[in-house]
Image: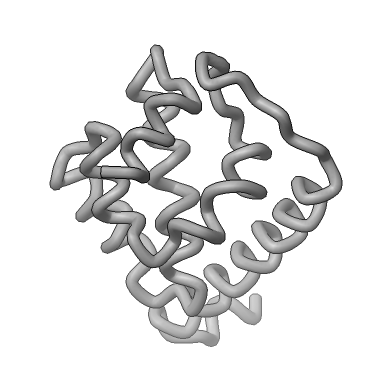
Length: 117
C-alpha cells in the first residue's frame, strides 16, 4: 500500500536500496568462505562476489566487454541500475551473472586474463 503512494523514481530508489542491502549481506557471508581455486575451475557467484566485484566494480563495463558481453547487454545492465546508489557494485554483479549464463566454458583463467587486459 505504501509503494502506491511513491513516485516511480522513489520506488526504484527504495527497491535498489533494499537490493543493495541484500547484496551486502551476501558479500559478508561470502567473505567467510576461504577461496582457493584452480584457474580451470568454473567460478560461482559467491566466489565472484568476495573476490572480484569489490576490486573491479569501477571498471565493470570494460571487464564485461573483455569477457565477451555485447554492448547492448552492458547497456541493459547499466540502464536497469540507473538510480541505484550502489550502481557500480550492482552492475558488476549482474554483469558477472550474465557472463556465467552466456559463457558455458567460463573459468577463473578467462576472468584473470580479462582483468589483465
